[in-house]
Length: 353
Ligand code: 2P0
Image 1 (tube, rainbow, N blue to C red):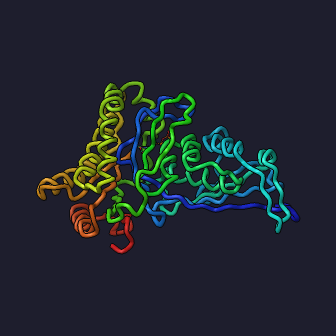
Image 2: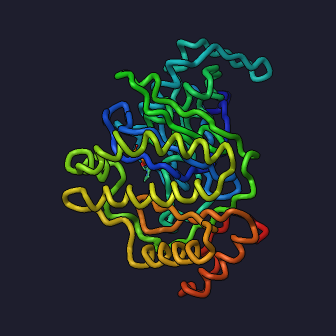
Image 3: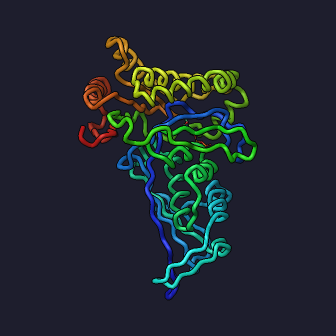
């Protein structure tokens, strides 16, 4: 920063979210409009979250960004779309103490520096664009005195990465696919806040820390182009499943919630297999975790744990309560002893366990 020049900064923290009804497939690639609604749960910010600081100063000659301390390119990326949309909505700003006055039309002339950190190891293979893009949009919006509501902010975050729109809210969130071609109704809404069903415990079992071979963006493009199952899923299965999931969340009905979550994860991976060439995100260990949970749920007569897998082999396991979570962790450690004896490989959604 040039001496005598001011810098304005804002910092935010945003957790990632885990979909229980999956988003897979776009009807518009540029605006990131999905082929179906999706529902997710936002994790608590102590785990798996992004912390982003954005700064503007007349002494910055260009827009720059650092991710986990390493500079990355901002050119032509989705960050640019979000930056453009936030700049459009920027308002007059005044900080008398610093003697800073910015007219809304002048925000576009100021360059931004963005520094973002994830509080989980990138090597864990859980790096998600959802938390980062949501955090960037929200924090930049604060800095530029944007007054739009959360729905509007979610639709901007969506243009950074589809799943990011759901991280604007805590608790349970639905991304409504919308109908309009301009995407203005493709926004996230909160179904229930973070206090509504807070005895659920989420355990993430890191099966592999390798980077995935097929990115979500290209994987879902291939599925849209080649999978007949995707069309059936989007048109026939998801609409009624979303209604049932909303009901299950409202009533804290774990049995229904678990059945729907597992079925939707399995159908998403079936769509991946139905894609040409087929996409394999899960591996043998993922399949063994599914068998373990299925057998356990079956032997108890009612679901104890729900599983869901995203575009990778790591298992996201949702236990009904703390007692079941302890039991689950014991089973995981028994059947899948960590090879490096490093228990931090198991990221536990509750510090006290
Ligand atoms: C989801 N996933 O609903 C699904 C389930 C992965 C599997 O959203 O192209 O990184 O940036 O919109 O958001 C991953 O897709 O893809 C994803 P883009 P995104 O969470």
